[in-house]
Length: 395
Image (cartoon, rainbow, N blue to C red; front, side, top):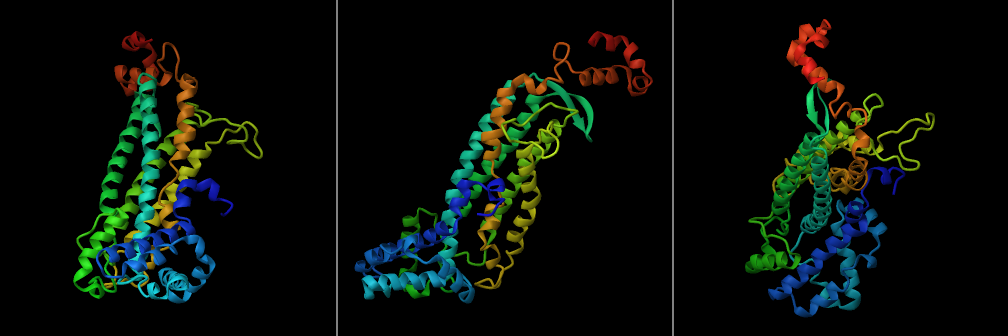
């Protein structure tokens, strides 16, 4: 863990994409492959237990994997070698059937898909809770008047509930997108050396079906070693989500400016303070989400530029996405809003809108807007607005 990880990261997501979890998911592929091939009579059933019993990450030297990967070009090659050595200590004959008919990219890609499945569950749960809280916010403040702002200037009256409903509507669209991309992306990768499964002869399709069933993944029409649109779609979908969270953070931070004081983040002990100015109440959660919104588009572009891959196996462009920090940073921690900002806004109620609730709930900006509408811009700017009969009716 680096010093800034707690600031920008999500514990739940980081556990899913941590090195031990990555290797374990790759080992889950190897264990499932052995079971699937035994069910199709490709390997002896006696080889299954010796193989699956060693598919545990705590039996592996991760530092050795990392160093050996420098020479092999990926993690799968040294991992399979270590697994074969472990199995051979138990059953030398079974060791012959480790990784039978698969290729490195089958292991790595399917392992990543399994990690994504876990991550989708976390993200879906975060967004559901966030959406519920936004719905409460929109309902609670359906009549809370405040000035709308266009080009950073006061425009016409609106209500805070409408702004919150806009956030909610966008979030619901993201939830639908994530459901759709989940269905398209959670598929097995299994094509063997060049996508033909030639080493399995006539049993290739049978093993593929059994392997997909073992891992509870969809079986795609074809292997997708150099067709990376599914993974690129995941990245762009998360980038869109990050953009919306950034828009929300921008709104909240602007409304928390001292001269506006319409919204506030929580004022817990040690939160949002300044090393120099004791009066400060900085929007910390907004700053973190905005930082993510600035960084994520460039990270998502890595997934898009890596789509132009060569023939049946990419060179370098496949490896470009292998650093999972790219993937997990394509999504800010929505729980920074879910568990922190929104509950506070719900609790604070009218307090956060103290400066815009005046004279029966109608703000000064509201009355100014009405005056401009009733008397015209030119008359209003000459000061005639205050003498307008129609304006006095609003007073």
